[in-house]
Length: 121
Image (tube, rainbow, N blue to C red; front, side):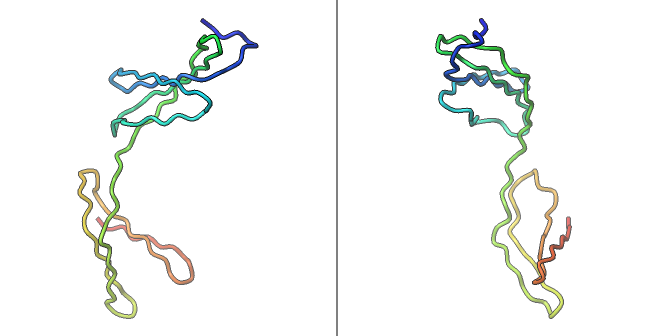
C-alpha cells in the first residue's frame, strides 16, 4: 500500500541487504538516523528507506544506496622517534597485525607547520 499524501509520517523502515542477498529490515521511530551494526568487512550493502504513517502504511522505498565496507585497520603502536644527528631522525613502531596492510606512510611536520610525507614499503 502507498501512503496517502496528507497522512502523518510516524517513522521509517530501513531495508538493507548484502551482496549475497541477505536482507534485514529495521523500524526507526522519531529519528532520521539509523546505525547498522554487525556488518561484514569487504562486503557491498544496499540501503533503502521507506516512510511509515500512523495507519502503519509503508510508502515506496528510496532508490538503493550502495556502500562497500572497508576493513578497519589498527594503527601502528609503540611509536618511537630517535635522533640520529642534527638533520635526521629514525622512526620505529610495532607492526600492525593485519593481512590488509602492505605499506606504511609516515607523515611529519616542520616547526613551520609544513606537512611532509614519506612513503616506505
